[in-house]
Image 1 (spheres, helix red, strand yellow):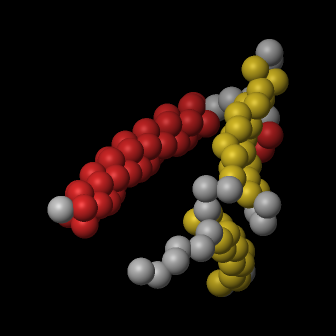
Image 2: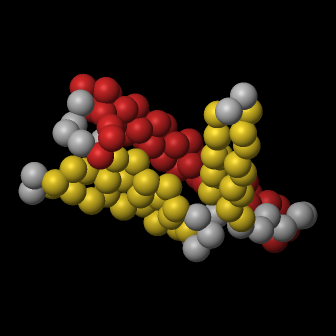
Amino acid sequence: MSEHKPYTYVTASIREGITRLDVSFCTSDMSAKAFGGGGERPFLTLSSTEAQMTVTTTGGGPVTERDVTLAREIFTAAARYLADCERLHTEQFADSDQAEQGKAA
């Protein structure tokens, strides 16, 4: 069985004068935090020791309708990610448990 080592992958590209940054967090050694409230603009941060990504309001200004829509999209995507992780983790645990029971027999 191959070992799955955690990593964070960051790339930058420039195409037709447009800069694009891609960050892939493939590690559980990270944190997700939300800041704001009390009249301050909200921040959502995902970070590992290698990289950090922060999402906040448009232009760092007042919350727009598009900011609210984006926050809902992030919430929906995170809920789906959670459901998929929980399902796969449960299946993997059941598979490994059955394999152990087969060895004991």
